[in-house]
Image (cartoon, rainbow, N blue to C red; front, side, top):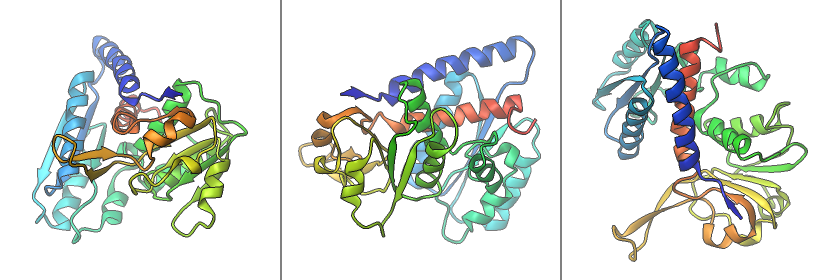
Length: 293
């Protein structure tokens, strides 16, 4: 069993990004600039955005964090999006989800300029990804594909099972695994809450991607020998033996499943660090105008 170490890999990619940023600056180019809009006080969102700001500093990006109280109106948030769309110094930006219930997340997503949509959520980028055109890929699926690529895991012709059909992870990663590319060319089964015989389907998988938000759902009897298991889950469970009384676990029962795998991601330290790194990679593409010219 080999660990798919997202923490180590993300650090290696960040070193490469920092080198490229230095070359841009040395040649008189524009410093890459990533902005983030954080609404409200969701703890997970605050940690995630704070890590994004740190990552920007590490690689030499300029970063802007716009914090707003949860009472902000939809119109006020739309004005912020409009201003960022028209700010030539900002290469890309994200509006951190979830948003307060009185704000329409889809409306906000549609308002973001596809040229600056480094989260890869705008239908323009989703559509381009679907037909194989250059696009800003959603950060977590992009990170997963980077792990497969850089660990030289060939999925061509393999059976891949994806559990979870969200627009952020499950659906896009199923498309990326199946499209004509490298990594890619896999035969993909997308499972969800209505899927029957899910255990039998999982047992067939050469590659199993789990993104459903249910702690330790995938058990050893659901995984075949030699499978590649990518655990996207991040769940905090009560554990009296842990120093803080809780601990983070994935959607996979790691201790039981790991011995059966050829490769597996840990939680934490697997897919999570790659998500932020993928956002940096998208921002660098935006700075270089690689997607839309």
